[in-house]
Length: 360
Image 1: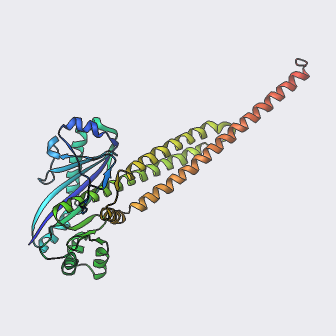
Image 2 (image 1 turned 60 degrees about the vertical axis):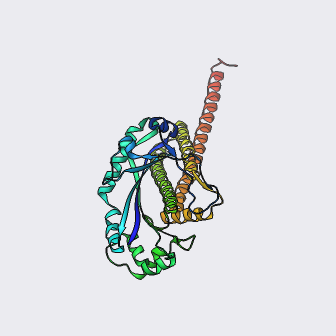
Image 3 (image 1 turned 180 degrees about the vertical axis):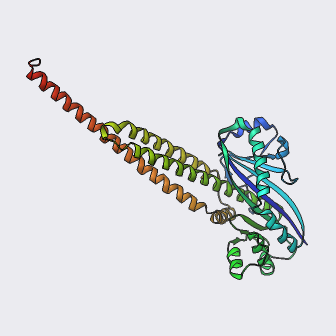
């Protein structure tokens, strides 16, 4: 008989930033989360620049998810994370039957967004440039309590196919190739613990404190993914607008200086804003000396594709940099041409005045 806890994570990008101090003033009795350190007995070695605020959803009257109260975590860079825990006791077959009903469930997604919007409405004064449409990410964590005398390797040998099928959310057996692909992305620290991660779900075999820390690291990884998705969409939209604007400015240099100057200023401002927000997101949590936590975050990041998203953003920032230099160059050419024409006009006027005898 399995003893497990299923955590459903729903994360929403709701604003450019959340003023955590103002949130604390609104909520009153809230706590800052402990630093996640899954295994190390040493002092905490994972450090938030701005420790998120966590509180129970019922504290502000937020809706539940099928009767489960939300654990809310607010990140200062504008992400609201909701975690709903479900205890489970049963067989592997029952867990496998339950899994597909929880992963990519549109009804649960809608309930989670309604809960998030209720929280945002309550904390609206603490949000900087709130969004009207929320980007979202969801992630399921199946945390199984270790069975006495069963190591992680034994679990993989006996139930590896079940773990892979659970994470894929499939009702039928998977192929051997797919099972190997899922189980290839796993990590253990002690003989009796295990984490298997995919892009939308994870299996954890650990005691409760270790599982809590794993969930928090996965939650943080998904919050980064959400931010990178937002920046990527923002840059796509802005690049499209800038291309149209620069096409509209294709007129003789004499008349185009102002348009190019305006484009250069917009590009420069956007680049600074995105780089600042990107740095704040990337540096929000640092792992110092905790090798397991760092490896776990690297595993989660690889499964979520964080480096690929960051690469896309860097490429678009380089494109913006090229547009900026082009706009500056065109603006300089336009101003130079205007000065040349001004000088020629003055010389022609002087010649006319000289031949008319007005000027000697």
